[in-house]
Structure formats: structure tokens, C-alpha cells
Image (tube, rainbow, N blue to C red; front, top):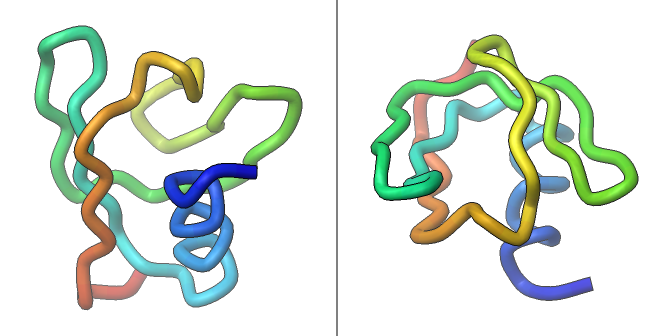
Length: 62
């Protein structure tokens, strides 16, 4: 498990919003709902973990 995966798991536990880049698109204020099998399930759709870059955990909670 790499550092980005650990940050995402912590964001799920604490119910924090997340920002990240995915295939050169920027996603902001995303709710991470579930993380399994290399996929991240969010309120904006499903994303492959290998293509996610620059993960930022926000202080805002949902």
C-alpha cells in the first residue's frame, strides 16, 4: 500500500473531502465513499488508483 492509498483510507475514516488530478483533469471537493480492488468510488464517479495524482486531503468534512 503506497502513501496515496493510506491518505485516501484516512480520508474515508474521517469523512474529509479530497482533491486530486485524474488523467489531466482536476477534481475538487470529492467525497470518497469506498476504496477496493484498485478502484476508488466517489460521489463524482469511479476512478482507477494508478491514474490519480496529487492527492490533497481537505479539512472540510461531509
